[in-house]
Image (cartoon, rainbow, N blue to C red; front, side):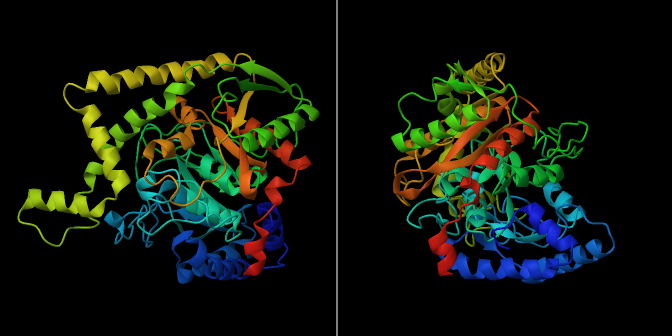
Length: 488
């Protein structure tokens, strides 16, 4: 049961082979067993989860079931949820109980899904390893000496360890896809604006996007059907006709053209990642796809552009955390200005402070034109590269991460090496494109490898079809970290 797909769980619930309460209790028991070692969850509230499960069972009994009714879903602790501690992985919000629901939470509540807990994350989603969390690092269930990736590492770990069948994440520069790759699960970042950011604590508003994480592409499609939708409370939310993201899953790939950017297959990728990615591409050839070499010449600019724009937006967004209205407040101070300074000095961690300082600097008088405006111009060039590439291909493929999961602490004192973990993922955020990662094998130390798939705007259904067809002929997405799984 813990290894079942969302469709299988929904069938068992509809056929009354198991109740939502029983299913929720089973996953809560598994979380209790594994979380002390993996640290994937910040908050569990059995009473609230089981109350939702009881409501779900009534919905099913009355014939009002949705495909996700009664199914436990973990929520990244960046989404506000009424009555739940919502910390964003930070001391600054360690006492904040949300008085309202994020749009994503509202939509899951409407279909009767069960919020089983809030998952650990890099502080304010700033990090690539889940080591910046105030609540301590999450460990990779495939190898507890390794990081799970970040910032949605808690969600990725929870799904990989089968502590939950599905989870939400957010992606600002790769924070759904990179941890999905390092933990051997599937994850998708939709087109910017498809998932409402209302109630999702902001990091970089022009880049942040919520999305689902699960074992398979089919599961992701079911989750996207719930998460996507227009929200007038979010000025960046896109108003589009509703889609069924499961509609194309079973279609053959046909004349699929896969773009392989020469920049993605140059030096920098480890040999074991390259081998797994090449094997996956060979499998797509067997499925009838043709390969096209494309070029994304401005890819090399993604990291510097991102680390000008994202910190600039973070500097603005995080100014609201001042100890006045909610969250942490320093216990000793002399006046209002001293309270601001001490609250922020004590409430924020080192990585958050670093990015606020960078962002404030690039927005300051005399540097705005030289850095921020230049970065915005380069962002347009990066997006234009994709526009040209998609004239030759349907999707772009490559590695999600240049290497498998690195060890805990290995890059803590080298921010540049940490930032390079997202070299392949950041460009999709800068362009606002949909992108996903699926598991395609194992590399060094038997740690998972992910394949990155980037589609054109609003092509999520086609991307999920492409991923699903691969998962029909391979079993990487079905594999669980057996040693840990069985030992517990």
